[in-house]
Image 1 (tube, rainbow, N blue to C red):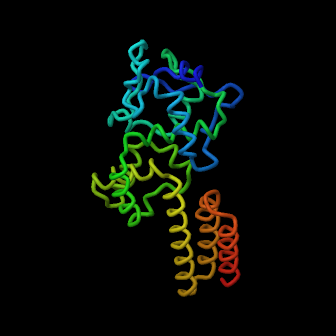
Image 2 (tube, helix red, strand yellow):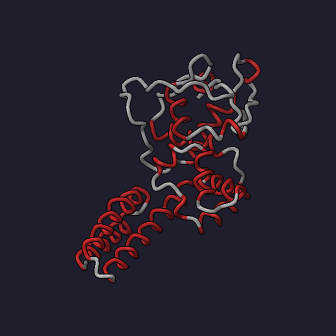
Image 3 (cartoon, rainbow, N blue to C red):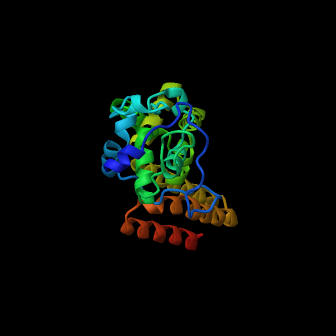
Length: 253
């Protein structure tokens, strides 16, 4: 990984312009991660490729930082990090950042680049804050993005605003963001399952009111939105059981 470490130089403190699409990837809708990030792999990649410039803890103080014309980004700077999304970090890792020493890492598999992007955005959030955030999210499932792609596209500031709009205090919202960034797979398992339960309950209420057509539409929406968003993060047997439950509900309606 020595060559990678030399190439992974710096990004502007202000974030820099958006990166161009990688060679061979068409411009258009932003790509999305297909699986939860591999934290262990990301930690290894970060140590080898990023820490020499960005520092072991992501504070922009790596041993090569002083050699660079553009200061490496600190992943702990609250103002700039609130304006960054995992998708932004993925674009920078994939295509580099123009006019800086931050080079392209498109030689890495896409899943490794996504894992590294998620890891970079987790560095400023500590474990105690994330534990508090877990308790917040257990009460506010509706505020959690419905898919890994949605979570990747939302900037930290947007996530915080979304959770605050659901009634959380600023401190609780910040803690919830910490939990989502440090362990996105855990909370993305919870949120769509919660929505699945809510959707089924609403379909049953409509049926009890005698609104059969509305109940059927609600069940169909629940299946296509909540279940489909959940399925990549749910084990196959549970996924099959959930599908059967939805199908039985729709037959009963």
